[in-house]
Length: 131
Image (cartoon, rainbow, N blue to C red):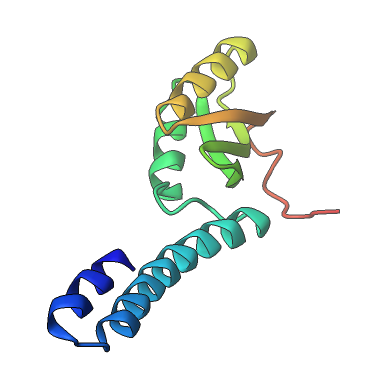
């Protein structure tokens, strides 16, 4: 508003006040819209925009001992904190504890800090049933 006063004082151009007010309103509206989109994404547990689920799945399936990854979900818990849940079907001779540790390290590269994994032997997760 001081800017508008500095324009109005020497020029007498009284439209400066509503013009500056409108510019401030547009600035606030744009920031509020961006914040609202993020808040809705968190509330609806949507996948964060910067995380590519296909890339996460590929990285997880590249871990030695992992045959397949299914039921993969990534969502935002709060600003900057991401969670993942997935089922990992293990190859026949895979060591459960070692695979779990490597999968945790794998998803940490995507800035995912809260991980819930269910490991199973290959063939267990073929039937899609959710209760």
